[in-house]
Length: 140
Image (cartoon, rainbow, N blue to C red):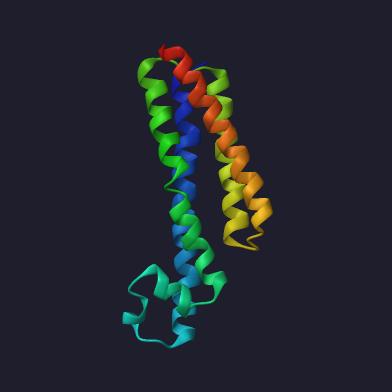
């Protein structure tokens, strides 16, 4: 297995984060214009939530979520590469984590069904924690 293969799902997740960021502004700016409130109304996340419809806030919540478990994913992928422990299982698990995060983001940014999001989040977490568990076993 080519150790650099671990970087492709990492780059995919970075691209997903960029897409969600663009989508968030494509929804939020028109919603802000439609609300016709002074820009200073939107000083904190709480005031934004109160001033805009929920659909305009879904992508922002997802964007924040893309800086939670994915941070561990990025660090773990780099760790695996640096230590020379990248193997096929890690790469497949990295792709699984990425796929679950894409599906989670699609749900979170659109119809936002909590139970669907929950199971997609759990699937990604299982893939990530499998990678972490194997890395810990290799380290001891």
